[in-house]
Length: 472
Image (cartoon, rainbow, N blue to C red):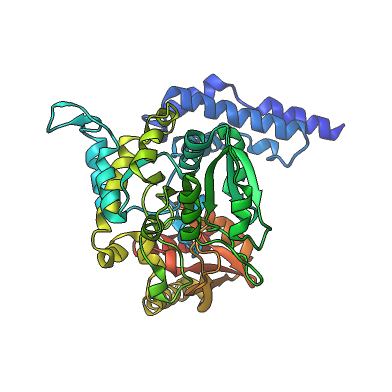
């Protein structure tokens, strides 16, 4: 009975919407806030409060449910509503191409070009020299051909779209021969067999999971074979007793039977990373030199540009793909084209590209530079008021991420943090809800920040976040 009385007392203390609305208009905090946002926030607070009371959840004491208390709740709700859902975060995970955190960062030149294009009209589909309608692909086609040696090129919204478009154009209603070990799945349940089925192509898998031979492909060829497909397993690796057919041999087979050969590189790269002592990753140029008819790869992974699906190859096949009506549904906008063009221009000087493109710069950062940054951050955290923060530099490994270079572990320097009176989960939660959020990871019962992916301007935000943590 007493519980029912408490609930009734709490429900009676909830003020009316109009009363809170009138009070809010006198508060400077709500100046400039749209009425629709304010009303929605008030109703959200009231609905949540009523539900908590009726469901016997922990609720404030009846005497605390005042207009002031309610208004404070409304302020919090309004602040959340007025904060953009998509916002910057500090990536302290050590995963360079972090799919959940927006993948590759753009270079300063790309960002500058984006701002110019976003605020002004452009020659997106206008040929300035001829004074008539042009093709949006011309913005990057010549660059891609120059950098890779391809005869022709085009770009769509992402690599999944590129693979689908190529399969639908070249092999709809026909069989596509592919090694069983290359039937990959990437993030978001994107599976090669599913995409192939949607495209109208007929899957013809050959070989075994770990070993596929030249004769497996040749035996699978029949009158209805439309394409030989090779998929680079960029997000996993088979080690041990394995065998696969080289692209050059597949091209030879394709020419013998007059069947086009396509390669999906996934995380395509224009840089040979083996010069840094890493495991060899095939480059786009090598695929083109091998004679492949069509190659596809992503723009926002190892290339270090915006989300895009790049299609290169022989002009005859690219022209067919360009004329497919689905191309319009998969095309990219002017901002993506502008960012991609700026990114590609860096590759005219590969040595400079590694320094100018953030993804490449982070992947190849000298360990000594990371250590200096980590030591400086740890020292500042240890000097915080009260001495409650205990930070130290530890050796851990960074990852390329984004389904790229799965076996690569980059030695890195991290700052491992403990705070008196706070668990590692408390720290992780607070940092994740800071402004801007600081995303790290928990290892060995400590909150850890990998400095490989932390930008110089992020250090101040990290320090402010920990200062805020100490006040709670």
